[in-house]
Image (tube, rainbow, N blue to C red; front, top):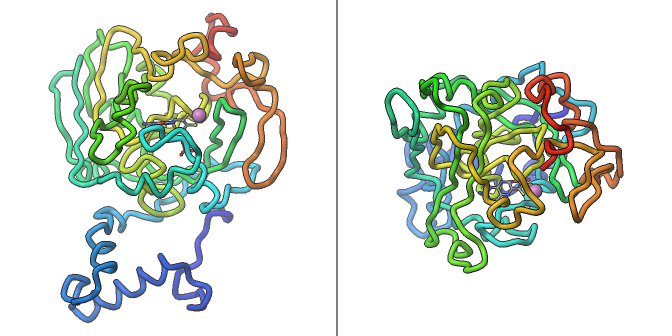
Length: 321
Ligand SMILES: Nc1nc2c(c(=O)[nH]1)N[C@H]1C(S)=C(S)[C@@H](COP(=O)(O)O)O[C@H]1N2
Ligand SMILES: [Mo]
């Protein structure tokens, strides 16, 4: 995990510090003086950032989980943070600045459907319910590009256990926020928001299924799908739904957002398979962002050992969609 170790900000010369680090130093200084950011007149920008300060920032960096390391370099944060899919903010990769409209507090996550007792969890309580850990995961989009990301969060299985689903529950159906006042693209007539995704209960219980609350040793940036998104590294990226507000346990297989939009191109399973092409993109190889490498894609994105048994006896060709 050495690759993701961050030098403490005090070890970096001021001239090299990013604006963010400079801000954090300033904030700590103000705190130390007992002032806080709010007392300063004429410090509008600083105040805006202080109000934005994430209430869970103290949880990062989260302890690395040594079971999830990789043979690839981590994609630099500034590359990842400026190359995103988040259709609530547009269909281009450059949605980072638009995504700053997302308001992540207050935020609740509703858990319902086939459970013993439905509940609504305040995000800060939820994030503090389970110990956070850092995992290095591959991230492979069906558009045939890939990254390596240090996610922080907790296994989805913990949340499933917490939710106490009934025996009749077969799938989890998850939803992203719907609020055009902070995501104007949601007014688009072309797309049908909110974004929806789903997994089987068995997939959710696999240790690889990860609820993400942070990345790069800090709370999740808005463009990554703050304050809570999923990471399913053996599936194409579109399964990893962002900015989750609702999880329902259901009996029927949910129709995801991409299936609703284009059923001939997208399906429920979406397991990475280099041998089965998407109608528009071969999946044999992938472009590793930032490195410029073009490398062969692996079955289940390299995670076959952990997940292949979930699909025993199923038609492999169907599993890519
Ligand atoms: N709510 C929501 N979740 C989403 C998307 C989206 O448009 N909206 N895009 C998906 C797709 S296609 C991919 S590849 C990943 C991108 O995640 P990243 O921007 O962190 O790389 O998020 C997925 N989750
Ligand atoms: Mo994607």
